[in-house]
Image 1 (cartoon, rainbow, N blue to C red):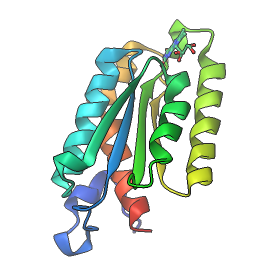
Image 2 (image 1 turned 120 degrees about the horizontal axis):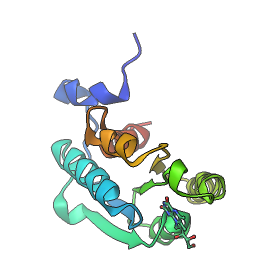
Image 3 (image 1 turned 45 degrees about the horizontal axis):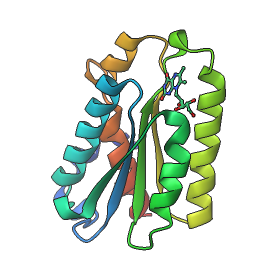
Image 4 (image 1 turned 180 degrees about the vertical axis):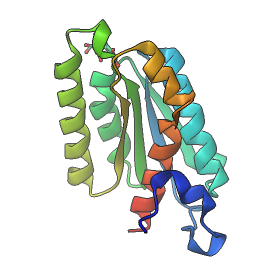
Length: 158
Ligand code: DLZ
């Protein structure tokens, strides 16, 4: 049976990639800050729990999710960075920009990942409401920041 991303923390230690020397950048959108701070907390703690060193995790803020792609590019072009995790939240009910921002950031992050040949993870929530966002940022549906970090680790072990 396929292992879900959420269950990586249940892997025995022999199956977990040693990430103690891996360097991560986490790019965080300041828009919908309550949500993105919770996503950041989840991603950061998950990296630490899986063996990353605090000094190997850098954080960069950008104003909104639209800016995540450029923030990711600035991080990815640093040869020392092994993986970039992008965290944002675009709430559909609150913005007519929704489709533009979501399309732009999805394409932008993909392009950065392919250009720099390293994992650049799409940790952007696109819910209909603030409550749905909170449910996925440490609430009843878990924390997508955790899953973004786990995705980065799994891609490093590809
Ligand atoms: C402008 C805007 C709006 C209306 N809504 C959101 C949002 O829900 N989530 C988000 O991350 N950013 C939003 N932004 C800001 C844009 O991402 C971007 O920062 C601005 O358009 C400036 O380029």
